[in-house]
Image (cartoon, rainbow, N blue to C red; front, top):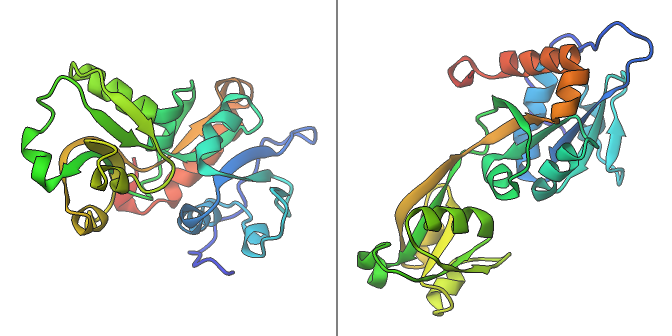
Length: 234
């Protein structure tokens, strides 16, 4: 597959040291990768190995400057937190749910959506003004924290599949889920009650790597910032 790549920058060079190791970058598999690859290429990262994917999960770039790790999105904070990857690209929802200590350096403004509380239309009028509820979500940690802030000690039901189904069949009173256009909620007769967070993909760094390889990481972050469209630069 060939990504729609903008004009490439010169390769993003690391510090001039023959002993310098490649920076390891954890990138998510799936849809977000198609938006991320043009940014990486515009920042000077050799993305050719990703254009002809094979079964390798750790892929060195041809120029030796970087090592790309293809990781399930929900696992990226763990790999970065443990120092296996120096840098990671992860959704803000994933970072909030993992609750690990990482240095966020840049909002990439891709994969934009919202994390919301939603309810079936026939019970939406109750809102959150009830002392105890059952809530279905893929994000139990975020959900628990949010509802405790509202003074509600909710029962959290963790699901991996469609959480809208849980509300439709009475397993849960409310759901917490990502929405983009809201079509899935409307198709299942549900309405949004509140927005918990606005979600985009963020560039995060392992704190130890940031201290030990500050110049290389800062150079890469600046290259990524310049690769963003002018209207999206932080």
